[in-house]
Structures are given as structure tokens and as C-alpha cells.
Image 1 (cartoon, rainbow, N blue to C red):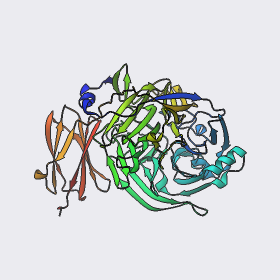
Image 2: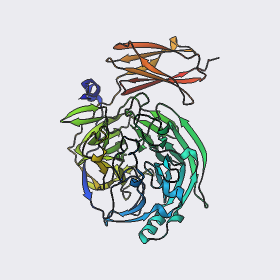
Image 3: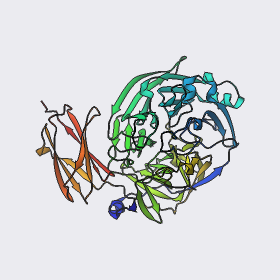
Image 4: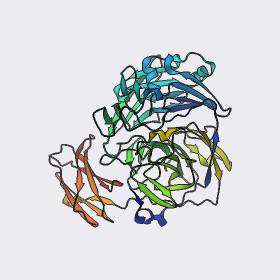
Length: 535
């Protein structure tokens, strides 16, 4: 059901929000590349202006029936090289490769990261001929990007440019792979084996990782190895897949990442709205801020303004619970396809704001697309563009390629998947300076608060006070320090204003417990309870 958002949620603190210095118009220009098909949910790398595209799907959004979802004949079984400047492409089939390689490299929603000349690919989901079923592949694969690009263009054999190892820790699809320093971060995602079924009938098994998996990779020699493996588990804040992982420059200059939105909440089939920051020192849920206009994996680009210490993130179309129609912000719990182009900004004091940009995607498109940045521009090692070092008033920041396009916002929820297809369009994305541009921020602040009444709490009892500016549905989750959900439920008989609730912790062995409240499946708050005096 679609309805107007309560004005309270979006304008209450609007006058106090900082103004972004992102004063650029975004210009999209379609580019025709011969021989390049429509693709979505693929992996990519680039070298000297040429792109390498691996895997993904050739059809649109997956159907809602198990026998029609993710057909094997729509796996992308070709590797593509694209020279966008010359509008040319070349391809090579994966079928010349050994079984484990060719099956993984035609999968969808792989986790990937380019580190210099190496592209690392983890997991991915697809129909496997060798397994006679759909599966998540338990592989880590490295790709020699420059030499593979050269071989594909020349039509030479390609097998020698891959290395692959197998381990169940890599059986992840729909997560994201990043790197901070020398450590790789495999963030979120899930293991999904079998056929998709929206009714949860036993045609599949699914396990969210709920984790950040950290490790180092060694590519020397004839095979891959990984070491220093560590897993950080949180079944609430890291229960994410199909999201955007944003490379970031934080206000203190530190490089890291931010998890942007993603699906699905534990207690509701709806996206998360608050981000989670990832740094070498840990992960930090930012529950004081909600991002409304982009909730699913889409093309995105991140730009840092060092002069004003502002981190800007742009999102291109995709799928979202919220969108603007005729100037009004609407919520649609079917989470439809949208045309929105939006941005978030992190300010010098760490606060965040979200903006709808005055341009939309040409159609309902962008979900499962990728943004391929222009690395001829000044950029950090994590590919964040250095905005304040660019002196031109008009410049190309990169290209947006592929994704799912739809003629109906509700094509998935109504199972009209024939209305969707893989988008073959390449868009050149340019920024043009516009000093008169003023974007009004949404108010993404969380109006709910939660606190531990220390004077009324003991090692076995936690007294929680929460304040509600208006009546809302209230759910709660109790989790342990090892990542187990100990208790979940709904709190009834709440009232507007101040409420209190007691939690009996005697039966729980964990010395540190987190209590999380969820208001209207929209706002999250958490409180850490230390039980160091527990006997």
C-alpha cells in the first residue's frame, strides 16, 4: 500500500541539517558499444581504458516460481572486453575452462575486488551442470586482468590467466568484497543453494553470513593461498545482502567502507535503511541516520571533497522502498523499481544527509548495474575520486553499464518478469559545475531513543527506557557477543512518550548482550549491556 510519509519524519530537524557542497549537475549520455549485450549483476575490472566483464545474467529480474527462476541458459557464459572510447568489444567463451572455473565465472552476484592487475572473485550463484542444481560456488578465483584482456582481443587461449581455490568460507553470493591496507573484507551476503522459492517451500537452503570475513591473499607461485582469517559476526547489523558497499574517506582521513542499505530485515521483508561503517578498528552501525532513496545494489560512485571535508556518494536508479512522485515522498513496501538519482553526504562532524538530485534515470533501470570509474582522474587507493583536485568545470567521472530495466515499477512483486530485461546501455556520466544548485536534504534522523537505566539494572536484569515521539510498532532482538539471537518479540501496550521494559538475562551465558529495538520496521536503536559482574 502506498501512502504519504508522515511529515514529522522528514522535516522535524531539516532546518539543522548542514548544506552539501556538491554543486554539480549530473549528465548521462548513452554510448553505443558494438557487440555488447545487456547484462546485470556481473563482475568487472579495468586496465588502460579497457574493461573486463565477467559473469552476470542476460535476462531480467528472476521469476517468483522455482521452475522459472534463474534459468541456466540465461547465465552469461562469455567474457567481454570493452573499449568504450572506440566503442568496440571482444569476447571469449568460458567453456574452454575447467568445470569449476567455467561454472563460477558464469554466476551472478559474485563478490569481487580489483587489486592492481589482479581481479579477485569470490562465490556467486548460478545453475551448475556438474551439481544438476543451483548453488553458491565455494571458490576464490584470481584473474590476471591485463593478460586476459590481451588474450581475449587476440583470440588466444585464456586458461593460464586464472587461479582458483575452494573453501566453504567463500560460498557467498550477494555480498561485497573490499580491501583496507593488506586485508580483504568479505562483507555480508548469504549462501543460497537450490531453487528460489518465495513461499519458503523446501526447494532451497539459505544461510546469511551475518559477518565480515577478513583475510589476506597470496598470489605468488602457481596457486592461491589465504591466511589470517577472522570472522566478525553480528546477526542484526550485518544481516545484509544485495547492498552497495561504498569506499569512503572518513572525516579523519581514514580509508574504509560503508554498507549502504540492503536486504532483508530479520523481522520484515523490507530493506535496512541505516548504514554501517567499516574501519580497521571494527564496524559501527550509524542508526541515527536513515537513507531512504536507494535500498538495493545499483551503480554508485564515491567522491571526496578534501577542502570542505565532505564525502559524497551518488546512486543511480535501482530499487527502493521510497521515491518521490509529484514532489511528495511516498513509501511502497513492495520495494519497486525507481528512476531516482540520489546522493548522501558525510560532513566533517560525521553527520550525514541525503538528497534527491534534479535528474532521474531515463527509465526504471539501474538495479544490478555497475559504475566503472574514470581512473584517469585523481583518486585514492580505494577508487574514491578526489573531487577537490579536479579543476575542470565539466568532466567525465566514469560510465554506468547494464543492470535490470523494467517497464513497470512492480514487475517483480506482480511476477511480470517479462516486463524486465538486462539493459545493454552504457551511459557516460559527466559532472558539470553549477554553483547555483541548491538541493534540499531529506531528514534522515532517527526520532526514537533507547537507553539503559544503569541504576535499575543488574548482571541479571536490564532495564531499558525508550522514548516514542509517536505511537509505533515496536519489535526487539536480544543478541550475544558471539552472534546468536537469544530472544525476539514484539512489545505491546506501548505509549507515546517515555516507556520502560525489563529484560531477564539470567539464562544467558554471554557476558555482553546487545538489545535492539526496531520501530515500524524503519528505525533501529541498540544498547550494549555489559554483565561483567555475572557469576
